[in-house]
Amino acid sequence: MANDMGSERQTNLTKATPTRNQKLTNLVLWVTAVGYVVFTVITAILPNGISVPAILFLFPFVLIHGLKRYPWKGIVVFIVITFIISGIMENLSILTGFPFGLYYYAAALGPKLFLVPLLIFPSYIAFGYLAWVLSTILVGRVRRGSTIFTSVAVPLVASFMMVDWDLSLDPIASTISKTWIWTQGGGYFGVPISNFLGWSLTTYIFFQLFALFLRQRGSGVSGPDLPITHYLQLILVYMWTGFGFVLNYLFRPANTQITDATGHVWQTSDIFETSAILAIYTMIFVSILALLIVFRDQQAHKQSQPLRLQN
Image (cartoon, rainbow, N blue to C red; front, side):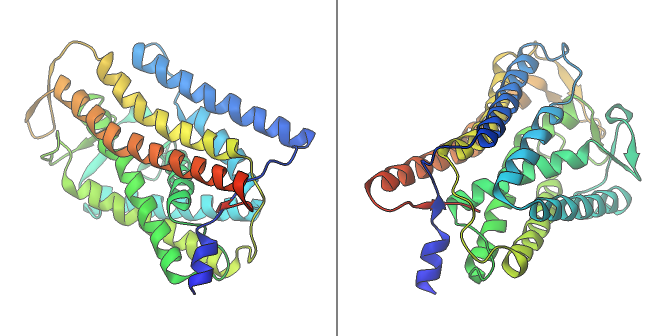
């Protein structure tokens, strides 16, 4: 077991000369990653200047990036599991209050599947994938025959990374932008604690199901050797999502009072500042930690046999 856990903590790094198709794929990934970063900066500076959802940049990046890590079956399974579990839990909560609390979505997000806007599902999938890969960098890969420890720890850590994102996002999206409305309010700028507990539960469930799939039906050997850029691209995207909240604070509009569904009055400047603080010490911190691990493994790769940074 000790040897198995040691191999699970390794990650695949390679210096092999990429093929033409690999170069093209890498270029597309960089274009979508940088496009997402630029979009994040522009929307922070000109919040009313762009109406295109950020997910339109992020989702293609995740699909292409995921296909480099897993066979098409693996990424399809991840998408299907995430789609089904998030859809069930979101609709259930809107109807009953479990697990997130009582809320509803505004019409601005467009067409819905039952009570949930279609745009919500790509967000779960895209940020879920980012959190999953970051968790494998920190904890280790999940593959066929992985230890119970790794198969549980990776989903658990990934679920916290998803909540890290929502901690900064939710007060802005709900209380300020009114994209969704918490009908009974909450102590965290109008957001109830049940929302974050519900996120932990929901995301852990679909991460754990994916881990069980990989443990039972995934590859039993090491996955493809991947260049360090493969990890840098993903870390950049997650980190800049965090920086987006810092930019929102730096370029925030003048402070105004805003009232939630229960009549409680909040200050928008307080919300933006708190979101920025949380992003720095959650999302950005996790990204820095992942970068340090990747560069540590790169140095070890140069000095001895390749270390394995992987699924």
